[in-house]
Image 1 (cartoon, rainbow, N blue to C red):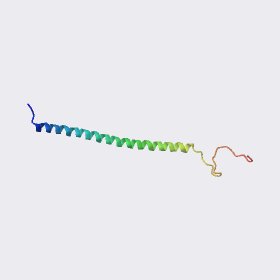
Image 2: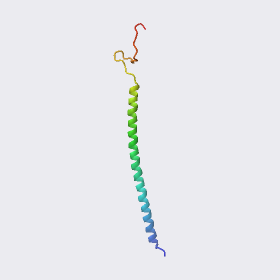
Image 3: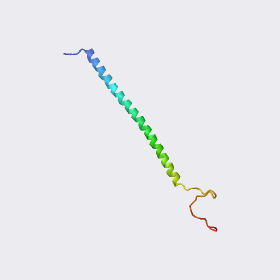
Image 4: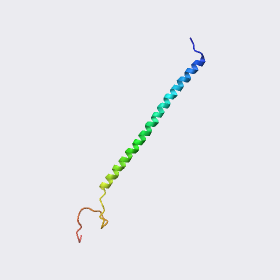
Length: 80
């Protein structure tokens, strides 16, 4: 028994709408995932910048306040 052409078209429209709904859901989930990943990358970048800044400060020798020279821990000898 053959279905009339109108029923074929109605079935096709329902299938296409179902596929569009599934694709829309897929896109929305991916957009949400990308937003969360972007947030995570920003957090990781901030932590790394803080860690590198702390390491840079730890490696920079302090300046001697009276002579404005690097403090090497040694003593200066007169006449040299």
